[in-house]
Length: 258
Image (cartoon, rainbow, N blue to C red):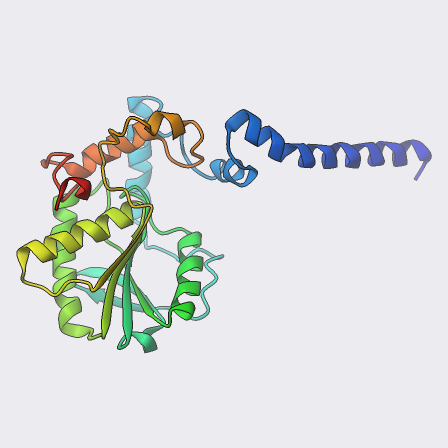
């Protein structure tokens, strides 16, 4: 290797190191967010609602995706293969089943009521199952665009009924993130109000989506910095999720309930 080639390689390596060193500062100054958040933004579809046609294409992609069997992501990081179950017509995966009699967490994964669980969900739940010595049941609840909130909660009440009949536990916890957090709260409120089924002893809600109208006046302040979620897209998904119900109905947006 001649000296000129060596100088070129050294210069390229130095430029790359300088770029990597400067990227966190660029991300903070230009986007107002961390380097990790900007890298995350490249994995998500914030451009799904640019036009009505683009949004319809996005929904068509999701219909095709949901028509296929769900496969665990290759990087899910599960310590053991989950048990497959069906409760009330809803397919479920159960982690750490030996702990079910002591503590059972029913986990509703987020995903704007349209996306299936991602690898990060399974990585988190795998760690949680061990740290909390809990069994974790993940229902694959009905999603957009094939159903709306009324259809989904009809199915979930059947799920809860069979859950109460077939799985006995000392402590039942509903847990969820984002849309799944909103679903956990809405479902718990419906069970409480109807008084026919046993509800959870505890709720654990991680950044729950409680208002599908996104009417909070501070949302525009954060919209450009958010690496994953587009407010306009979410409003349209929220309207689809509401179906014939009002977007402020507590079933759809539990923020407006008791």
